[in-house]
Length: 104
Image (cartoon, rainbow, N blue to C red; front, top):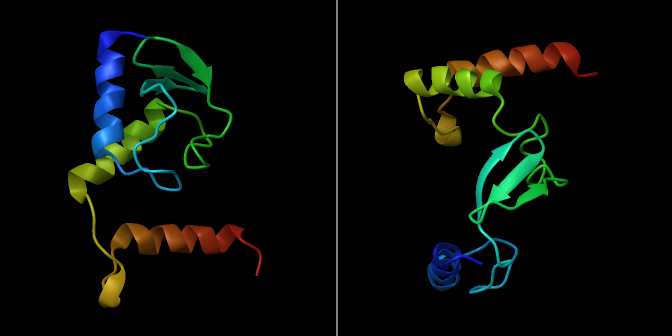
């Protein structure tokens, strides 16, 4: 393990609160990049992401088409809440498309 990774993991254990995990513990590696179904740690070791990072990247990591679509949306609006009656055009348009393909 490189010195950089050791320092990253030490800082992580001291300062990062992991959901569904015990405070101050990590898996002993720090992921740094991802492409397709593979993730790479800070020492350059590759792993297959068999959990799709818990289902939020089922289409694979670093997909250019998804990145460009996200960038286009981020250029318009980064975030709005749906709390207290707020709504936004992207959510409405997506809901309309979803309603066309989901069985009733």
